[in-house]
Image (cartoon, rainbow, N blue to C red; front, top):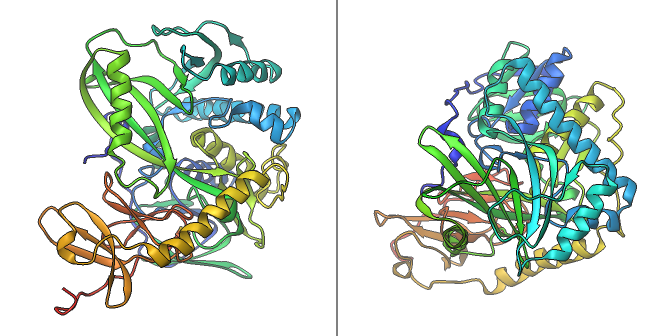
Length: 503
Ligand code: FES
């Protein structure tokens, strides 16, 4: 299935070189999404020599697969959950800091003249008759307490039972913004590299970042990879999720510009429009689930499609894509120096709110590296210990990781013989005593790799839609030939040669 996001229609493809020699810089940034590129912009503007090392194409990872929505409130459990886990003061700090990050994006767009369809729009939360009305009411109260400007109108032609709008939030094309920003800051002092895969990071007197194209020596490293690459304590309190998006052309009228969150009984669907050269499109996002827990995930797209067809007159389905997110157990991102490190900064736990949090993380970490005060540093401190705020989710997540680690190793076997793996399928098999991940492509060729995730040893699961091997423990994802797509794993899954006897 083609999983190209709609943002590519308006974003001109921008090419960056790949690293091909050893270099020395002040700051090495691993990851070229919105966090990494914003940090590179801030640090290089302040005179630091910076390099950005992106394993794929700049902005084409989580950033280029995101929603393009920018807002001060938060998704998933909402502001009322932050208040109960933390305090009203922390909830307000989150709203204020996120609003500052959105303002920063707008100012950057204006200053550098970046074309990315940025506009200010309302963010609307509502429930229909069978929806979660109590969630909406709890969030309305929090939005008022946080001092946000709200209206009780939801300008949407659906049977809204209850809802409200927060004015002056924003939308843009995240791929276009981030790749254009990277192009504008590219210079001798700010080197941006595509297809430069980090293979090892060592922190000592100086930091050494090894890549497939050369070694970078740096005073500090920023892990701007959505979840840090390698083994970090923070992985134990992070839940990896995938979420799905569908973009359609309608026969009927479109909703007005805005971010519309429809609170269903157990989750929310997010709606927005976007103008492309092929016409206006309506996008719906939702159906999140833990990574590696739903092999037949085509059903997620079907549910989103079904929702759109019930509510609107759909002419055609144009785009389908999905993206990953990491939810922290205490509800706040972890931003700053990682526990046990002195020179390595991390930024993770953004949940579904990554464009705004990614920008905020870049602002905080840049200030920390430049030894400037940042009023939000403490709120999002990476190495915090929060036994009360995170207890329930921490236990749940680690029981889940332990469950997969033990049960999958003992029992996961989905085929006995290679001919039981049909075209486009992936199955776990034992081959010559080894647990293997076996895929058959559409031409009938077998791809066999070790099923043991190179991060911390869980067994990978098949993702049918994206034809990838996904690890349910901390969200690493691999191609059918074992290459890392995303997540904390650095090394590829080991290729397995099949002997004639094992066939
Ligand atoms: Fe951690 Fe696979 S991602 S074990």
